Length: 153
Image (tube, rainbow, N blue to C red; front, side, top):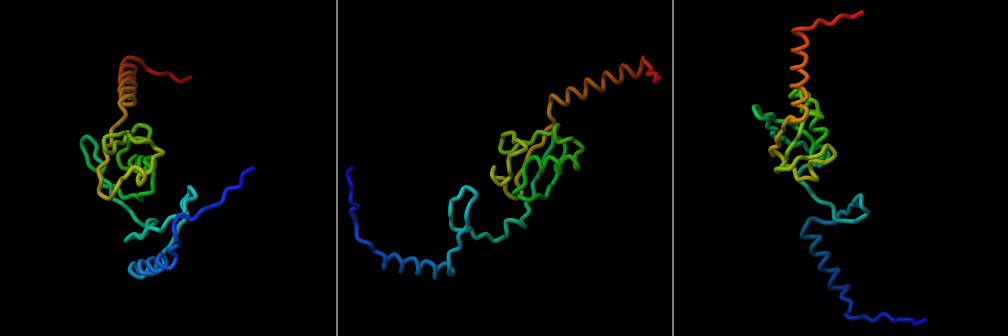
């Protein structure tokens, strides 16, 4: 078994490093605040003008004929946005297709992770497959309703 010794490749500048850190702390307003990310990484806490938990962004949701302004938290998912749009537009969430920056977004994707900012535009389309099924069903109901009568026993 071989035992290796550690060699110092450079001298320690602990006095110089501590004075530089103290000078930068004083320049930026004092003590550095740290936060632990969900992945376990320890990072310097970000300072924002507004509190992330209380911030609300306004999205311009554009359909083919209308434009809606929706206020929502940036940490919400596209699925939650679809639920709000269901109340506004009358389309069920499973009938909706949301496009942001040219890509269709899944219900599980979060707005802030994709890069949605305040006053960004999101396109809302009705799913063409469901639209065709609705048209076929309504045509079938019209045909059946005009020539046949239903009898309940």
